[in-house]
Amino acid sequence: MAKTSVTIPDDIFEEAKEFSDNFSALVTEAIKDYIRKKKVEKALKSFGQWSNRNKDSVTILNDLRSEDKRSYAKRSH
Image (cartoon, rainbow, N blue to C red; front, side, top):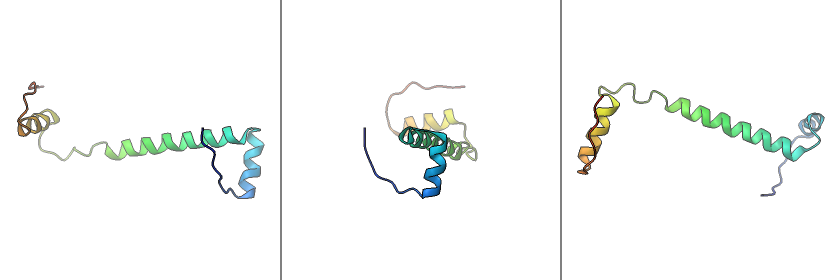
């Protein structure tokens, strides 16, 4: 477990202490929530990125496989 020092404005620190006796646990939970939120944002940003392609994903994948000159199983939909 890593230890680190952070600077938190006094008013935020005092308000946070009202919600938890264990400040470390509170900060850990807040960071976990932040990371989850950022992962969801990243996933949502990537969603639909290929929607403007004129080929379906199976065709694109098969094209990539054939360009690589490897012997992969061809799939169709």
